[in-house]
Image (cartoon, rainbow, N blue to C red; front, side, top):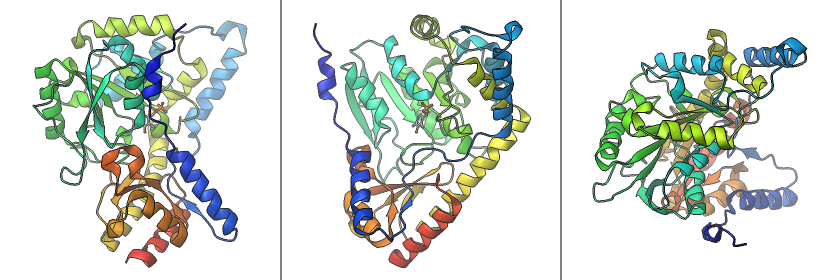
Length: 389
Ligand SMILES: *Cc1c(COP(=O)(O)O)cnc(C)c1O
């Protein structure tokens, strides 16, 4: 038996354990100080009423002989695929049902999709980046190159025609930076991919945070995307499904063999998302459901606005915060990411995430999130103003 040696090439991530250790040390020395966590990368609002009612109803169905369900279709129930098809048609994107695959979340599919691609492909990921893209490719032994996101390109790198990439990751609105590509910028990626016979793996987990109708919420709003892009989306951030687990992946027929290959992969290695969860997900896309989730999204977006306004008042450079729950700021006084982390903890008891943890271009930057309570966000920003205004 030989082990997969690629695992030895994974970099250990100490980001969140180091944060926890530093916070615990501070708390044990200063038990009377109130810590405010603005580093949360998870939703905090409960599931909306429509979702809960639909899941209750589905549980009742499962308890009765006549309506009990066992294995469902691996690619998801049609009732949910039809709701997603309708949801896309509202964005002027037409999808065939067979192009929509229901999953237990975007993270698993972003990793699993790599089953369809050869080891010899070159992978292009932005830096800073959601670590899943890099690590899943390292596990497979693929070569990863980076597209530099930085203050000059407002953390929205565009294709470099000197680099020949086969698999390209794009996340917009972005985690960790909150930056969003406009249609013209995404078009340059689509054109690059089509002319290089490359595939774009488009992560649209935060599409729901976009409020400007001019900004693309799906890559298929861009002409030519159906011949070069797979889209991954999730109800996690949209509807608070981080613990409930449901997402969907779009593999267009125009990608040739890929649609049938993905179906084969899923029917072989996956047995579907629970019926109860899919009924809950279906409820998200009803008129009532969409209205209810928009109230939660508005709450997070209000927090993001409070943080953004504070950065402006303090003259701190940042991106994000408008169509995203993330605010990506330049550490004041040229502090490094971890220096700023320590400084904020000591002087304001506010906890965020050092940008250096997301890649080398993250050094000198810092991520704040809007998933906290409004009261805490306001208080944290008052403390910010005392230090930096
Ligand atoms: C939260 C998040 C997801 C969603 O993952 P799930 O597995 O669906 O919970 C996907 N991509 C990014 C960048 C995220 O931050």
